[in-house]
Amino acid sequence: MEKIKLEDCYVSEEYGFILQDPLVKLPEYYKPWMDIAENLTELIETKKLRDEVRKMPELDIQHLKGHRQLRLARVFLSHILMGYMWQNGETGGVKVLPRNLAVPYHKVSQILGMPLIMIHADFVLANWKRKDPTGPLTIENLSTIVSIPGGDNLQGFVLVTLLVEVAAIPAVNAIIRAVKAIQEDDRQTLLTTLQDLEQSITKMSAALQLMHEYVDSDVYYNTIRTFLSGWKDNPNMPEGLLYEGVSDNPFYFSGGSAAQSSVYHALDELFGIQHRPESADFLLKMRSYMPPAHNQFINWVREAQSLPEYVVRSQDPALLSSFNQGISALTENRSLHIRIVSKYVSAAGVRARMKKKQIENHGQDQQERGTGGSQAMTFLKSVRDTCKEGILRQSTPGDH
Image 1 (tube, one colour):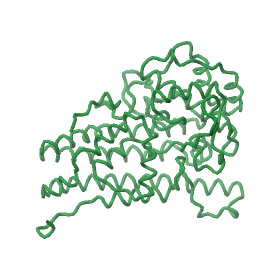
Image 2 (cartoon, rainbow, N blue to C red):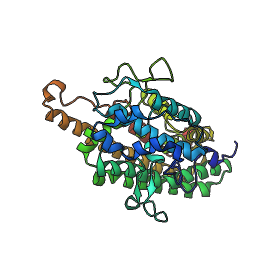
Image 3 (tube, rainbow, N blue to C red):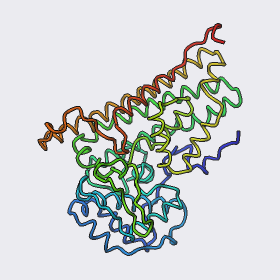
Image 4 (cartoon, rainbow, N blue to C red):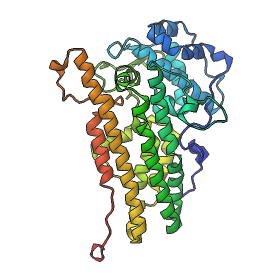
């Protein structure tokens, strides 16, 4: 199996899947984009964004040089696009995206191989900066480059999600070491690697817990969630979205989703977790909502020698135990995600409908859709349960 070059996958030992030191400014030519992005929240809240976007010149992308400038252009344009779409709330979407936004967005996205909608890589992985350039990656020393409405809660939501990715950096390194250790039949290295993996996943859960501290569930549900919504499987957008100057046919894209985080896909591939068809189908679709280079990394893990098979074959109780502890840590992380979705989407949704006095019509058991378009709770519980099924049992002589 060929050795992977991390830099080709835009994955690094220091930053995992996070874009390393994103740029915060583009060349002066792109000032119209930067000015709108800088004032985005205010323009959305005063309902002036659509007017400003329509006045914007159609800029050429030829002055964008290198991966980080393209990624920053995506961050700016993706946020402007979502603001333009949902400025008037989740039932006030538009049917046509004007060409001065649609055409450059399409060109940048084509080069990067990303879909024509804001994804996790734009909202989180490339949308951060340090307050103190020499300081650590902590919530106190981080802020977003571009923001949408939601104030401190929006900052909290993006930065806590980023901290989960920060906590996952040792896991990304452990995945690489585990693949190599299996290739080289190095059980001792694999054992310590599996222990590192479990610690990293546990830290990812600790980071995810911070959501309760930094994000109010009603602000998330009523404000932030709207701007992450897509136009696929969205009852408010049955006709999709027409990108003027790009295509004569409308496009349908899923909104932002935690299922677009590459680290969870890489962990599933390493642990050999087999999701049920419906969940697996959605997860597989979400891989096209990632930078293609990250997908390449996930495929590299998938094509490697099977970790569960190696552990079973080894008949090594320590390896088996460490493997199962890693699975348990990942299962607990997914249970935590279910509890968060229950609080921030399901319960907050019920409260929002009660406020609108629509509870009699909708019923309290109505299941909320995730921003990615999936039936949130059913999907997450299925993913968690199949994760739990990845636990291996000690083989006995009669098993072979």
